[in-house]
Length: 287
Image: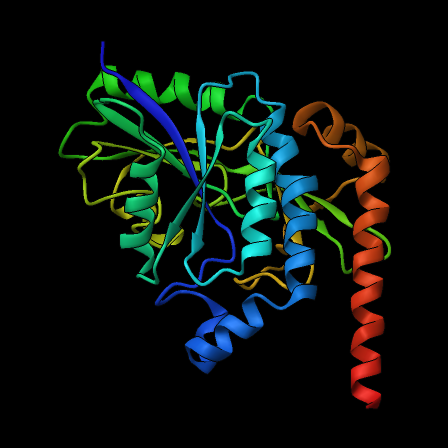
């Protein structure tokens, strides 16, 4: 039976060569903006209270998440990340110099590999998003089946894509939660099955082009991700026009039961972050 390792990569404030909004002003300006204390406090708040709890709750704990960081990240933030690894066997940190998205993530996936493997099923996850508590279990089951069927080979990659999730718009006071099934693969809750030495991984193509470059298995039905909108996303995000508004009680129930999150604590926490940011912005404008 083929050995298939499940490995995720989270680019945690990684200062790469391309693909990040913060690079527009050049490397020095990007580093200053990227590692600003207020920004890093927000990123850790998302990572520690949304992303990691959903992974802590996984029904299948046989996986690795690599937090990819740049070698310019200040020590105090590296220390905080290292502390998060202490009680999480699945979590490790990879420190790399600035490189393009594909080169850096290929190396990061390799950092998550212990021993030999015939395939890596590699997923991507942002620090402010979450996956369902059975995401690893279901991804492994489907990926192993695709390997047996010959859909994923040493030469041809295949993708496992879950399309339905919850959009959480933290910028709104009301109607924050929305149910949506994507019409095409999303970077979130998608994984690529490929040979460890392959030039391909889930970061290889823009998610909109994934289905034109890889065989894709798609499930549009189960809730498999939480995607947050808060005004500080590296990519442009908005509530899709066809999304269905979720009642607050239903979203909170799904957060608890499907994602291992604590809505009673994190919803007001994220509201405070938004309010503090808005207050700071007003102060800066007046000055």
